[in-house]
Image (tube, rainbow, N blue to C red):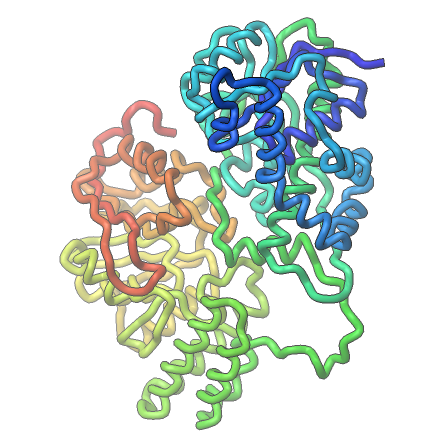
Length: 574
């Protein structure tokens, strides 16, 4: 027996919409209506009169485009799909059967009595808004396709539903399934009533699963791009659909509005799209490789700091050749660059005996970090920050950064706090200009590296501390707080909201103090920077806003701000 619900599915062609409809049918549920969206060049195929037979053809062409990756993965990597379905047994209902139905002869008309194909240019299209208006008094299930604009929320009488693969209110934003696996150790799913803020609506249901691993069969490991596509073709949609059907739609009698509990917006973290290096780590944990029958002697040795220890205990002319060889063997461009940076700096040690003991001690901390620190290594086995004074080349150019920001002039004679100082090389470089510097970092091995550098340089006006930002408290109030790409971090070690972060910065400054701020690169922060700037301006007045072209590829195109502390944060601050 099938039960029809007062529900319209706003069907954006792709795995989410299909998983929702398949799981509903298998649970004996049926939406009252499906709005099948046909967009862009496919919508244009409707031609004059927008004839239904032509729209059907356009919809099928859109299917082959939007679902290219799941079709291709099933055809070319059946062992990977098999590993996924086996891992999901006991996590969701009928994973193998659901995947087959999603991609074998799926047709929207089989899943509701009324299926309307709506040609559209965007969600602002009047044709979409008119179609939604006919769902007044019903729930509307959003299935992806982009950010919903204000006009959709203004359609009277509809309740917009969304399912999100992060445990709300703790995990919001983008790539949340991977972030959940990384920072919470397990996948989470939440269903909620959509509001205009990102993932901020009332919560209808949540579920946090047991830790998930999908062991890969022996043989050549698929590349990260293929694993990422598989994750969002099969794992993500099935987790969403299972929660939606079991915990939201099945218990709903369809007689009243779906009502949730108010979400606590003061807690949780809004994550951005993962940096590729962090994504590699998350995918590596989710998709562990099954050991193959390759003899141990055939395994490729890792280019880790520990492998180079002997070259620092006793200098060797062979070491630069070893570094060059290892750099050629690395698949990851940043690790290759880090090894080449090490090779360059080691060449300097052959000529400068006074730095040899220092670099030996610094490398020993990198060895300990690789062995004992489980979070992401921004330096990729060497250093993230450079230091001309210490003879270190990093992935980021500290001297060029300081010069571009005119940082020594900005902090001259002032007390400075640096948040998330990494190896502390920037704090050490500005210390001769500042009256006093306090710098803290969560990673204790990086803090010890900074302390070794301070002793070597004879700097005594810098305090270097081990702390997270959330736990950092002091009665001291500073002239300047440096927040350089630390308002959100890609290693999952930051858990406070942006509102909490910048309110804490405000508290740490004296009246008239300044927040000196650097964004993430646009490729990582993107449009989310507008939201960040809005929150900054609640507590600070922006007096300088610049984009600089300097240094390495990791330095360029970031936004640099100087912000004066407002006497009191504006309304809306946490």
